[in-house]
Amino acid sequence: MESIVGAINNVVWGTWGLSVFPVLVILCLLAGLFYTVQTRFVQIRLFSEMVRLLKSNKSSAQGISSFQALTVSLSGRVGTGNIAGVATAIGFGGPGAIFWMWLVAILGAATAYIEATLGQIYKETDVETGEYRGGPAFYIERAMGQRWYAWIFAIATIIACGLLLPTVQSNAIGGAVAQTIGEGTNITTSMGVFSSTKIITGLIIITMLGFIIFGGVKRIANFAQVVVPFMALAYILTALTIIGLNIDQLPRIIGMIFNDAFTPMAGLGAAIGLGVKRGVYSNEAGQGTAPHAAAAAEVDHPAQQGLVQSFSIYIDTLFICTATAFMILITGMFNVGSAEAGFHVQNIAANISAEGPAFTQMAIESVMPGIGNPFIAIALFFFSFTTLLAYYYIAESNVAYIRRSVKIPGAILLLKIVLIAAVFFGAVIKAKIVWDLGDIGLGIMAWVNIIAILIIFFMGRPAMRALKDYEAQRKAGVKKYTFDPVKLGIKNAHFWENK
Image (cartoon, rainbow, N blue to C red; front, top):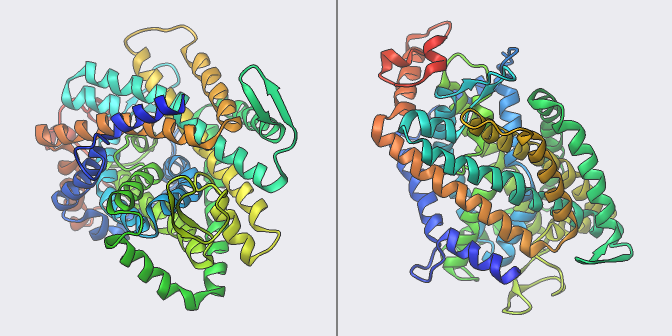
């Protein structure tokens, strides 16, 4: 099964032996560069405006606040990729992979602006729940006029976020708990031998998950806006403590990252491929997940939520992923390579897997004995748990999209059951296969979404028109921003037309 999943993963990412780098990696970088140039570096020019917009607490019965939308999208961005994904990038791509992770974040922030703004422009009000709905399926249908292509994205996203990606998050939680308290006893089943610790952990996760996802988007948003900032701050403070205690090592570590980015110890393809892949996995720029939360926000102008979502890339990758990388590299708690293929660098035992949170746990443990293992287990639990909530909301939004055309009795209930089963499955199985499953889900969504937003750009440039309009109003010093799609020549933005 591992070899089959791995082969599918290679096909999805375009690792066909035709290039040093996977084709999808190249597409992610080029799309980010293209939008960076087209928006005239919006992610840098309007940085102060992004920070100002974070203070907005405007919400309604239909929509959540801009800050809540940020935390819901951060729930999806900040997860296993920030802790275990960074370790994997270093373990197989070397320290230089972090440079490429930074690059994809800076470029990806422009892509994030485009897709989030499109999510806002083409959002709708759900006739059943009264809540705002939106995302790539909605803007593909409205802006491209291609419902069949929108259906491909919706179905791919339901499979990815409802079945494949959740396994990665719960697996990281199960692995971190087992690393902290031990595997427990082995339990033999018809599907194999599983750790009792991971089984109990899986049961706890799905019990909590079920309670929240049956409460709707408001409950998800209320949970996320409390937990995400608190855990992110605690994690960064811990990292700053470790960096501060080893501040004399920081210049060497930064030099190592930049040097290895261009003379990679694990090979250029591995460094860039792992850096970009784990960067996209972590910050999700271009993947098409964040526009769902962006569409749920109550804002005066679509560009406002686009800017907020652009800022979330910085929080995810430049703050949290960098914190993880510095902790691992400063303490030297990493290997590069594998026992099977040979190590380029071996600082710790050969049996310590890079496909999990172990490097990060050992890094904190080496400086704060007795704290590293439980702290990462707790951090991973909350980071990954809130990501599971975001995945559910994204999958539900796409089920809602399909139900606009085809009434499927019990579709939402079935989604909840499938996701809960996938979460339990992920918590108890080996890490290698779940990362490949997650990469397949991520890759399919990214292909469909990036191609869509590029086509939409050349068809009508709606996100660019929104940006130009917003900057014009900002320059004029308006008290309250407005958005008139008809005046701007943007078609089929029915929500805003009616508003």
